Structures are given as structure tokens and as C-alpha cells.
Image 1 (cartoon, rainbow, N blue to C red):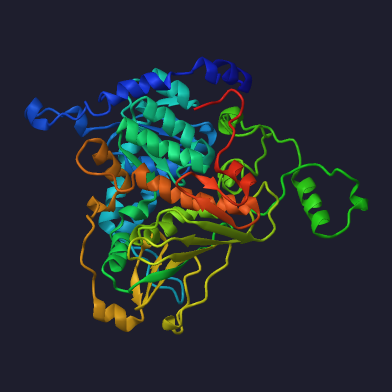
Image 2 (image 1 turned 90 degrees about the horizontal axis):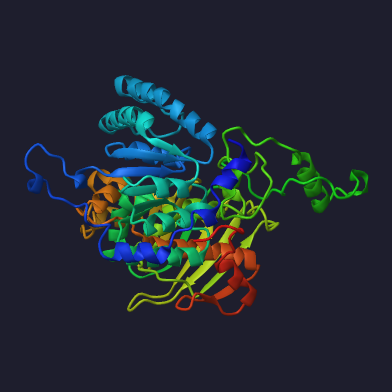
Length: 524
């Protein structure tokens, strides 16, 4: 099917659904009526609530991993704008099975010189093998789509929707799914702009469906222990937090010009910064055919019209303002999360981002973002600093010869000591070592997520068995904090923020960055 045919067949105005009608239907309980206890049906019968019918939207990258973790349920529909890329991921499932089996039998490879032993859990590895085998068996039975709107309109047996597309389509797809009364799991960051985050939180409250953001560290035992250290007062009053990641590093390009031909002859350009960037843009310029199985129009979705280029897709979209929110969107949900949770941080009163050169199209190579959070009851104000692109805080003297992990981490500085944890909230420990040893494990105040399985926690929430670990109510606020760093970057100066009114009070043009215009023909 040509791109033109896709466009003609799937124009949004032809698929328009009355949001008010769906909200009315959902409000009277359509999302909840599938919960049927086993004893009602009798021995030997599986009630609808025991198995969830799940659809995946965006299944070529992280979505593939999510599907593996959801394989105990019925995967009834798959939707992706690029089936060429998605199928390559599914083809690698056999290789992953063989690699895992080899490790189960022989153990992990020996560590590199100077590195700690590789952690490997044979039980978890075998469970993953079993899930992959189950997914492989289900894939041929799942109906395939390229347009999520068509999927939601046509397939009525879907109970829940996984959204793992590029960032710019998270909100439109999630809103559409909730309008249809579906439970929704959305990869991080929840949305591309602040206004969308608030819309998703509001819609989740209205529809009462089970929601979850894909920041799996929120369900980890270690992450919850990190929070409990703070709750127990292990380091006293916290006024200062430092959080860092090495992304984007080599994972995707940032700080690059948008590909375009030279506007002036090359021999007239100087070899200064502007001249070099112009040459780099020209070197990448060219006419690249859209891959056969990619519907570029559907990838763009609500985003602006941009010609296809392989520097944008797949995955590289994360570094471009049109479709992603850079390093803070990728890793902020894994790193800011536990500090914000433990300290009960609401929204900041001011945000300032400084960076390496920013061209407005591709996020800078490295940024520093300074947040100021107000006092909360007896808890003092907090200054939180975000570092990415290789920038890092000063090493605490309590570490001695040990270095901070360059991959990422968080350091909370309190009046009685410090707390250090790694990405996803892993391996929390108190500094100095003497404090860690004397304090011991903090009292457990937070419930633990069964097997630390973030996706299955959402499934069980949809079945009415548990509460979701990271529902939109919390995830939207965390996402807003992350996105305000991007707003300050685009504003080019420190912003003062009125969270109650969702308004930048001192740099009025920056309010435009709290929301966005959708491409003509698209709406939510």
C-alpha cells in the first residue's frame, strides 16, 4: 500500500470519535465490568478478568521488551508504523532464547578486568525464556495494524493498550485508548509537553482505567528502599539533590544540525562554528527513500511535516525537538523519580537550564538544569540539579578512591549524611559507610511489587487485584518536572513557574512551550 493510500484511508476526520460519548460510557463503569471472580464461574473456568487482551502500539523497540514481560496475557493486536523494523526485532527472539539458554547452562561470561562480577539470576533468565517462547507462539495470531485509530475502531476485544511509540505520539494514542475504555501502559516520558501530561492525568481520573508509566525502577525493591531511607530520616533534612546521566553519549545523536543543502557556496563559508555546522548539515543532506514498510506520514502523526531522513528514525527521534525530549525525557523518569517520591516534591517554583550550543531543532550535547522546589510542611526547600551528556556533580569526599558511576545516579545531601543510588534507584546506600552500617535497613513502609514486575503490576491493577505502581496521577507530575527542564532550555533563561495555574510568570513567550499545536488533520 502506498503512503498516499494510507493517508486517504485513514484521515483523522474520517475516524473522528466523540470523546464525550466515550467518556459517558466509561463513566458508568465499562472499564470495570470485566472483573469476574473465579468462584462465580466455577472450577475449571477461566474468568475474563484472569487473562487480559492486550494490544501493543509501537512494538519495534522498548515495546518488544514490554510484550515479552506481558506474554502471560493474550497479545491480540500489534500496531507499528514500521513493520520492517518491528519484524527485525521479533526475528531476534530466537537468538535471545539461545543466548539465555547458554547462560543458564554455563553461567555469565567472566567480568572485564577491574569490573565486578556480572550479576545473573538463572531463575529469572528461565522465566524470560518461557515468556519469549509464549510470545513467539502468540505473535502469528495477533492482528496487525499500522494505524492505531483503525485498530481501536475495528477490534473490540482489546482490554488494554501498551504505548511504546516515539514520545510525540504517547498522549494522542493514550487518550484515544482511554476514550475507548482501555487500560493504558505508556512508556516514559509520559508526554511531549506539560499540557498533555495534565490531560492524561485528568482523563485517567475520569475513566478510572488502570494506568502505568514505563519507569520500571518505580517497582524495584531497591528503589523503594531508597525512598524508605529518606522517609526514616536516615540523612536528616535534605536541601540539595544532584542527579546525572551519561546520555545521550553514543546512544543517539544530539547537538547536530538538521540536514539541509548549503544555502551559500562552500568557498564563501568560514571555518568557524556556523560554517562547520552548515557543512555538516549539507554533508547529511540528500534524498533518502522511505523504507518499504514504513508509513512516514503515520510516524509523523501529530508532529510537524518533515521529510524523511534516516537520522530521524528509528530511535534517533529522541534527540529531536519535534518527536522527543532528549536525555532528561529518556532517563529522568528513572533517576529523578525516587528523589521526587521520597521528598514529596510537588512542582518547582523556578527552573534554569544551561547547555552546550542549542540550535532549536536538536537537543544540546549536554545540559545542566537547576530546579528550586518550595518547602513542604516541615520539610525544607530543595535545590535539585540535573546533569547529562557527561557532566557530573563533584564526587562526595566520603567515597574516597571510589568514583561516581558515569552511567548515572543520584546523590541526596542531608543534614546528617548522604544517600547515593544508581539508575532505576538501584543499590541505595548511605554515606559515609559508617552511617550505612550503623543505620541498617530502613523500616519497610512501602508495599513491594510482586517479583518487581512493572508491566504485570499494571495487568493486575487492570484486573482489580492491586494498585498500579506508577499511575498517571503520579507519573504526570514527574513528567511535568522533567519537561520543565526542556521549557527552560527553549526559553533560554531562568523561568519562574506557577504550577497551580500551569503558567510561566516571568518569560511569557515560554508559555508556548508548555503546549503544542498538532498537525492539521490531527486532534485529540
